[in-house]
Length: 238
Ligand code: SAH
Image (cartoon, rainbow, N blue to C red):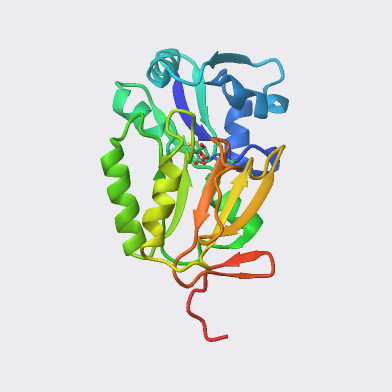
């Protein structure tokens, strides 16, 4: 009897993967995933059977994994958490009668937050700037309402060549609701090889260091820098 595990491998550095994710990857017959992500967990794969795919073609990847899971144990991997812009939703939508289990992972916003301080201490939200699967009008609406609601905002998929101006537009919208000194952190390759951190405020932000390997965290109206730590207070009287 087969089974499909949808595994979040965390940010990339192996020590940030959950013990459960590690155990599943080591135990299954086949690991399915995007080539670059398989590379990140190479030490765990040894001579295991793998099925590598390109970045697009998520649907084919999921169908293939479900097909294989009819009589083998299979892990399909996502970075971070597989339930946050990962493969878990699509797998469950396509699932027929295979057994499926979702294994959570440390998502990019948590990883980046840990490096820069404690920016997500109060109500926060994730918004992806990718319009491949979401109309841009809806993305803009969510940014505006999140800004108005004073949520700390983590922007996933913040910039790509096809939509270079979305991030700037998002920042302009947020400026309508927050002050010049609001912290903004750009964290690239959080908790994996090539990690890079750049700190800004709403007043001096530039997007030149931002790419698709980065996440952008924008503080709420109470967030501040203490030295190089980005903190959002919870409300304690200190
Ligand atoms: N499932 C993943 C998100 C996939 S969407 C998760 O839970 O983290 C892909 C986007 O996630 C990237 O464009 C980037 O914005 C962000 N991302 C993923 N891993 C990251 C890392 N280690 N450092 C910074 N950003 C990361």
